[in-house]
Length: 377
Ligand code: SF4
Image (cartoon, rainbow, N blue to C red):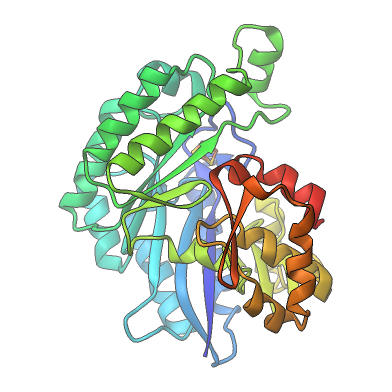
């Protein structure tokens, strides 16, 4: 059997956050969301894979999938069960949720539908920062949502945090991380703010009404997250992710292994049998294509062996345990000496060799983009 991940995109949010340039739309109203839902189910049913593919994970992302009525999530899960081969123990099934869009009852319905992992977009517990980011929730709603998730029976809960924000200080961030970690979540992701053209945040920065922390301040903020989470027993298992042992995100591990995945919903990307292809990005074009019985994807690219092994190496180096160069060589038919020779040029303090594996050090992780561009592309 070949394990595969399934990503399902729900692109609607109550409103757009000030920094967002994801493929997401402010709520167009229930009737168009219903039309999209029906198209999504059609697309899922048409995406059955060969019998030798087995779903290792399902990830319902967005957007704000927790805006979906409970019955729609149950529909999605039902179609997935009927369309794809499931492992005996069932796949990891994650949903992205935003505080302010869940209730104890809706969370119970998600568990009943078979969703067994939830990832909250908390970002910060500082009400001033949440307002500056244009998030819809308050600190109180964030904490309440996590407590409700635990009460509803979720025992695999993750929180997304952001750092490098205007006006974010080390004490503010430290208190956010401590307070969330005290709730006993199993998993954390932390991402630096990325300022995208055309967003309200970018305009506020350009006008001078807000300013970003400098490079040293951002590094100090990143360090706080790592320190606090590590001291609470979380393992920094990937550049941007921490978990208790055994709670690593299986779905993301497929991406970091450069494994195969199917993406359904507008803009979702698939990587199957060496081909990478996205679904139509525009939600209305996507719906029109599905309704017309067309395959709602744009033509993809077939990656050559050279591109695939380099990509697999770079993705693997995001993980704490790095990459087994012997296995990488076998997978792509490359002499292992050639793979080790790449490291001759990389400064020794940026990487470590552990048997047949190579991994980046913390310093290497901090400079990973430069390492990838300079040595491996
Ligand atoms: S919740 Fe996420 S996807 Fe939705 S607008 Fe905010 S950042 Fe964008």
